[in-house]
Length: 434
Image 1 (cartoon, rainbow, N blue to C red):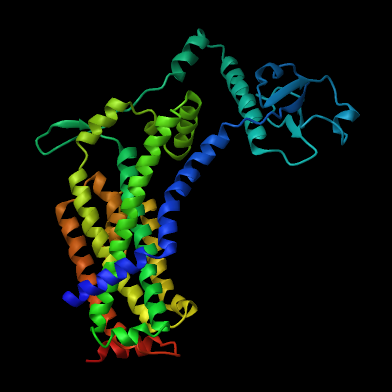
Image 2 (image 1 turned 90 degrees about the vertical axis):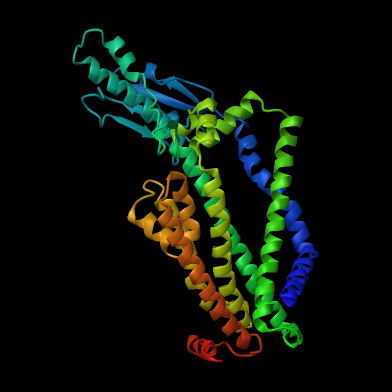
C-alpha cells in the first residue's frame, strides 16, 4: 500500500507541475465564461440594416397586418415595376398577394433575387397566418367575437406537486429536476472521457520512454496501474475544484463590476428560453425555493460520488490496460473505439430518457454497468426505488473490480511488450497467465 501511495504522489505532483496542466487550469474558466458571455453580449449588438419588403396587395386586406419594425420595412406598391427586380434595387424581397388567402391559400408569393433568410420568411408568414386565422373565425359571424378571442388567448399555469410517504404535498418541477440530473450526468461523462484518456496517454508515454522498465523493478505492475489511476483521479478532482472556485469568483466579480442591466437580463432570459421549455422560464423564485427544500440532494450527492468513483475505476482501468498494450495512439483506437461508443451511447440514452425516466431504455441503461454511471443520474431526481440503486451499484462495482483484475493481468505483460501491436487473442492469453 505504501508503494501505491508513492506512485500516487509521483503521478499527482508530476502532472500538477506540467505547463499544459497549469495553463489549462487557469485558462479554462475564462474560456467557459467567454463561451457563455460572448453570445449574450454579441446578441445585444443590433444590426442597423433594415430589410425593405415591397408589398403588392391586390386585395387590400393584408398590408396593415404587416407591421414594420427595426428589422423590416414594408412598402406598399400598386403593381410590379421593372426597377424592383434590377441589380441596384434596395428591396430585399417582393410580396405579392392576388386573392383572399382564407379562400385561396396559394395566392401569396414572396420573391427575391437571392435566397431569403429564414427569419424573414417566418416573420411574414406568421403575420399573414394570424390575419387569415382571424378572418376565418370572423366569417362565422359569432357574437362578441373579440371578447371570446381575448378569453381564449389567456393561458394557465399547471402547478405540479408530489407527496411523500406521510402524504405531505410539496411543489415539484420536472424541468429543474431534469436540469440538475443532466448536470451530474455531464460531469461524469466528461470526467471519464477526459481523465480516462489521460491515464492511457500517460501509460503509453512512460512505456515509450522505457521508464516502465525501471519502475517495474521496484513495484508490481498492479501497484503501478492503481497508483496511476488514483493519481490521475486526484489531479482531475483538483482541477475541477480550482475551476469551480474560479468560476464562482468570476461570476460574482462580473456582477459586482458590471451589474446585470435590463438588456443583459433580457438576453440571458432569451438564451435560457431557447434551451428550455416555457414552463421552466415562468417558474417564480418562491416556487423554486420551495421545490429546492424538498429535492433529494443528499441522495443525489451520495449516488453521484459512488457512481463517479465506480465509473471512473471501470473505464480508467480499461484505458490503462490499452495504454500498456500498444505503442502508438493509432494502435489504441482499435481497442478504445468500442468502449467510447458505449460511453457515447450512455449519454444519448440519458438524453433519450428525459421524457420517460421510468421507461425500458432508462431502466436497463441505469442497471447495465457500462452505462449506469451516466444514465442513473438522470433518473434519481425523479425517484428511483432503493433496490434499483443497490442493484446498479453492485453490478457497477462488481464489473469494475473484475475489470481491474483483467486490466492488471494485461498491464503486467503489456508494459514490457514493444514493437508489436497485440491482437485480442494474444491479450486473452495474457489474462490467463499465472
